Image (cartoon, rainbow, N blue to C red):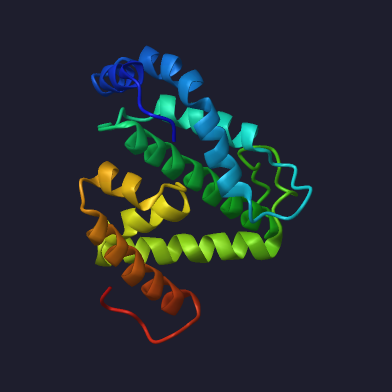
Length: 193
């Protein structure tokens, strides 16, 4: 991510203080990074996928504006919040798609229900459940893994965002990745990370 400017910092502070208009000013400044983040989230979809990064950005933006204003510490932290919202949009999208397949008749949030493959929806839902279990066992490791793989943040950015040392982030990633592999491949139930 580009060097953080005083304008971004002030807008983040204003947003933290409850000024929802600050988010409107902040969004164009970080739009390029949000677009990269959305593309990162969508990179594993099938070629020709009709759900585009712009649609994901817009849906995430609507949710960001309508949710309780979170405590934002820095620009990487803002990106991590946006990434979590995008992940939730995709998970909701997958759940709606699966519900539609069962005849529930629900509308997908982005009107793209046919775009996500059945296998990708299953994988995304399994990963989301595994991350929820990891969150219950070790919230910090869950946050680190989400920022790395859903947020696309580098280790140093994760360390800054969470106030951790780089060594702690590296260790958390290694342990959480091993735990998730075991969970997702049907290994023995993991009770510790």
